[in-house]
Length: 633
Ligand SMILES: Nc1ncnc2c1ncn2[C@@H]1O[C@H](COP(=O)(O)OP(=O)(O)OP(=O)(O)O)[C@@H](O)[C@H]1O
Image (cartoon, rainbow, N blue to C red; front, side, top):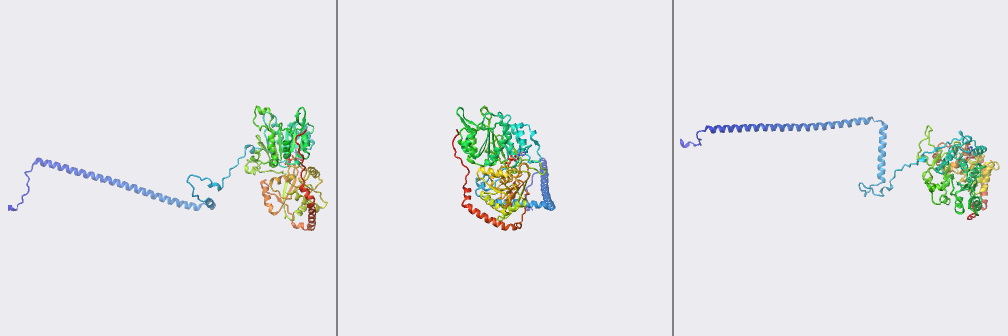
């Protein structure tokens, strides 16, 4: 049996001490295991917590996202609802605006194709040259925006001549003797201002002035009277006032006014327009004395720009260095004229060493610079145009007032200020539409219907004035006195015709625009623009020959149908939007047909004859040209 006994290792007898030790070890290990188990469990719990927390945040984020999404959906839904409630007009406007901007964008993109050379952030020079630039708003200088306003009301005159003590007694008496009892608004403003501004002119140079007031408002006396008063004091003759005008007729008229109001003074006035010979004019201005050399003989010189330059160049001893007043009447017209470069020659003559506006010892020793006085019914308020006169601290007197609905003057606006003119309140303006063929007959009918006398008729050329005169003479027979006047006539004949018309001995005076400016013809009943005026300025001056000095007057313009819109456009510039039409039916002219045909035949006959003789003479007639002789004796 033993054979089958497996001899296993049999330990020795258990050692109790070792057994205890081993048991302790085992216990420790078991405790360790238990601790580790607990630790692992704790770890697991922690991880689980973290996991849970992560899960929670994700969930809340999801929830938040979901909430946001829902909110967004809600908002868009609300907006949708709101939009539906937008009122129809608003949405229309929005649509229009969007369409307009889109269209503009399309246009822009069409206008300016994408440039392949464009570099981001850089502008390639020249690319934008074709794009429309924004208009720069013009800003007027202060003196133009702060004028002294002149009333156009000549019916209610508040300034009696006897009350204006600034003018001396002698002048006031002369005014009353000439039928002027009250001052017109332009005179009431300008005369006292000029006298005051010249009180200390040796120390404080007076400011230059620009005066823009309607035709027939009395601008002439506004400069004549103060100048006479201020020059009275001088005993030594020097040219102290120079008046420049655009035409001989006007120069003559202003000369007349100076003569009238210088009565009883020692002021000498001279007119140089070319009517007299050059030598005669030279002798009127200067004389030569053995002991003193050249001596001036006059105080005031009135001239046309062209004739002035002739004297500046050729008259020895012609001294303008003592000039105190430089008056330019119809200033816009004079400044337009480049006649012999008059402004350049004049400046050179007044300031041989160049102009000096600075008050210093040098300028104090010399004479003061002349005060420039500019007058016109259509004076340019364009600072660029006025710039050429280098005005000294200019002051503006104007009747141009922008009025609001409550008739209160408003701020000056460049667009509505420059190029605006006023006309007399008493002027009634109308137009007649007619065909070209029947125009002369329509004129005949109108004159007869209105029983017109003392009427000025303006045509665009000497020839058309001449033909119209022949035709009207033939139509009216001896019923009315009809004459023509133009710059082709000699000064003497023109003065004679003007005198006869003023006295009422000519009923219809047919003229070119030569007579449109400044000429003062008393009580003109009607002004007819037989040829439509090309510019607003020419219309204003033509029409301004009537309704002068507060009198009523009628201005009628004859137009072909194609001219009506342009004419209305012109008048709009002067804020005349309701010019009435006078309707004369062409049927009313039928009974005059035979008479008209006969007159036309007569006209043809006369013109043919004249073409051979007279008209040629008129065309070749030159103004009287004097032989210039240098210096005077
Ligand atoms: N205070 C006044 N009382 C009455 N009549 C006057 C007065 N002042 C001027 N007149 C007359 O009024 C008319 C027009 O004057 P004036 O020729 O000076 O006008 P104007 O403003 O220069 O016109 P235009 O712009 O056409 O040249 C003249 O016959 C003048 O004698």
